Amino acid sequence: MDFTFTEEQQAAVEAAKAVFADVAPDSVRSPALTPGAVAEEFDRPLWAKLAASDLTGLVLDPAHGGAGLDTIALCLVLREAARVLARVPLLEHCATAMAVQAYGGPALAALLPAAARGETVLTVAAHGRSGHDPAELSVTARLDGDSATWTLDGVQTAVPWAHSADWIAVPAHTGEGDAVLALVPPTADGLALGDQFSTSGEKMAELTLDGVRVPAGHLIDAPGAWERLRQLLATGTCALALGLGESVLTMTSQYTSKREQFGFPVATFQAVAVQAADRYIDLRAMEVTLWQAAWRLDRAADGAGGPLPVSGDVAVAKIWASEGVRRVVQTAQHLHGGFGADTDYPLHRYHAWAKQLELQLGPAAAHEEFLGDLLAAHPLA
Image 1 (cartoon, rainbow, N blue to C red):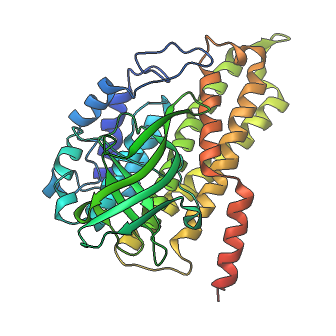
Image 2 (tube, rainbow, N blue to C red):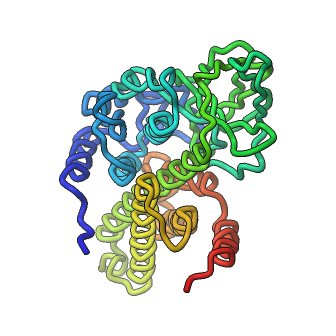
C-alpha cells in the first residue's frame, strides 16, 4: 500500500513553505510578542500571499477558481502554518467553503469564487475551532410563515475571526432533525459582536443574535452538513497541533544540542534524550492518526464506508493531538529551563498557542468515552 502523498499534495506543501518561509513566529505585523498582547486583526499581508499562491482556494473545485484538492492537502498546509503560528483564518475559511460547496445552493455557491481568491473571508461560529456537542447548540432557527426567510436567536461564544470575516456560518437547531447552517454577515441587523480573547491572545467574538433574518438561500439544511463541518474543523485543529509540536521539538533539539553542562551538551544526557524521544513518539502518533482521520473524511465524502463511522477516527486523532501537544510543550519548557520563560524567546508563545489548541480540542477523556460508546454500538467482528 502506498502511503506517499500525491504530487498535487506535495506541491501544496511546497507552496505553503514558500509563503511561510520569512514569517516570524506569531507575527501579525502588530502587536509585539509580549505576554498579554492581543491581535486585533489577522495577518492581512500574509493572507494576500496565501491567496496569490492559490492556497485560499485549495479545497474548492476548479469551477470556482480553486485547486480541487482534498482534506489531506488542507491539513498539510495547516501544519506548515502552525510551525510559524500564522495568524490567518485558513482552517475556518477552507472548512466553511468546503461545506458551502458540498451542501449550499446557488446563492451560497456565488460566494465561492471570491472566497477562492481570498477576497471574501469565511469563518464559522463553532465555539473555537473544533466545534461542540450538537445537543448544546445555543442558537435557534425558525422558519417564517412565508417559507423564504429564517430567523435566528441565541448566543454563540468564542467565534474566531468574526470581527474580520465577511460571512459567518452559524449552526442552529430547529427543534427537530439535524442542525442547520446559516451564512450571516457580521453587519446583519440584530447581530452583535462582543469582544472575547483566547489564551493565545487571539481576538474572538461572542455572537448575540436577536431576530436575525436569513434568506432561505443562505441556509444549509442538508442532513449531516454541520457534523461534517465539525469534523473538518476538529481534524484541521489536529493538523495545527502537529505542526506546532514539530516546531517546538525542533527548537528544543537545537537548544539542548548547544546548551552545555559539565562540559557536555545536555542533549547527550540520558534523562534529556529519553524525554525528547518520548515526545517524538507523541508526534508520530499525532501524525498517523491525523492522516487516518483526514483520509476517512475524504473517503466518507465520496460515499465510502468503514467498520466504524468517521467520527471514531476523528476522536482518536483528537485524543492524541490534545494530549500530545500538551506534553510536547511542557517537556520543551522543562528542557529549556529558565530560558524557556524568557519573553524574548518564542517558546512562551508556542506554549500559549498549544494550550489554546488543547482547550479547543477538548479533554482526551471525553473523546475516549465517546470512542468507547461508538465501539459498543458498532462491535467489530
